[in-house]
Image (cartoon, rainbow, N blue to C red; front, side):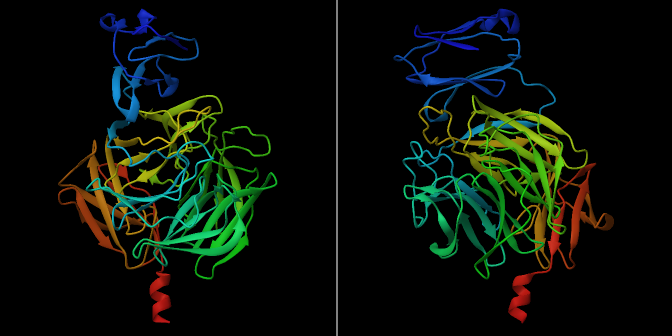
Length: 472
């Protein structure tokens, strides 16, 4: 529990939890102050002037071990306490976005090492934007792209490698729910609108290389709905819906399946802890071990790393969380991996081909929601293998060059041999030079890479439909 008093101090009341050297601290924070304790938002609001007093009290359901205070523009002002040694991530703030945005959509293009960010709102849902941004990971440079056809927030987006375009589906504008699909060409910086059904804000989508379709999980009149979009023929069909209606969760493709994590049940309004897996070949859903949290608003267009699905930043209906959880596909278990700097939801982001995560924007207030310009970097500790095709870290096409990066505590590790597995069997060997290796795949199948006891993600490789179409 956090108590706010306007007198100019940060006071840590329960001395037994902390080192005596910082039982009583004084700081000047300006007018805006936010505090998190163990990744849980404890306070967010305006100070009465240049100084304020924040008293942090220990409550029975919260072990107070890692306290962070930050001010406007995400400036970290105070960090005290130690995170558990079992944590596997390191966090750091990055230069902010050109403007604050929440409930925006994003895609990562590994070929050009850029994030594309679309829509969102600046001050509540009544202020949607048509802004489209590109962030160059290497240079840190932001670029304004051609504006979207209509200002909206809460849409979902997906990269479609068969024609190398990006598709934005659903969302809410000042006119109501978005009807149709926005197609964006990142090479010519051009938008066009494709006719289609109305899709609610908070829907989720993912590309499947197995059928060459974009799967959209949404709802209609409180009932679950599973739409399948074919960008080549600009057509929609329906597939087996999930057993419960879900919005504002996370959807990702991995190893010929779709993984749907948590979100809000629009029928009840409750944030529900569930993991539901869709088998694309059999058109069936299966319940898996539910996550140890209730929440929505995490990154909806996500990815996998080290054979784990990561869930970052969410809102449980009462409080905002800055926590990182992972799901191990092999063991079926969940684990708390660490705390992020800023408890929030409505974020965008993803995993880069250099093996770290970037998180953009979001909100940290329900009563007066305002888009944040915060950008945060997550790096993973230990030995890790990062494999990326020109399209993704979980799928590729015959003829693609797959790049493998060997990392040790976030740095490239040299002098290691990498074993290539195809469909579960040893296939070949690669030598990492300066921590990097590559191969050009010549046959379809499920590829995986192993080095120093660590495994990469499974990389599903399918025939290249684009080259087949050109040959035909």
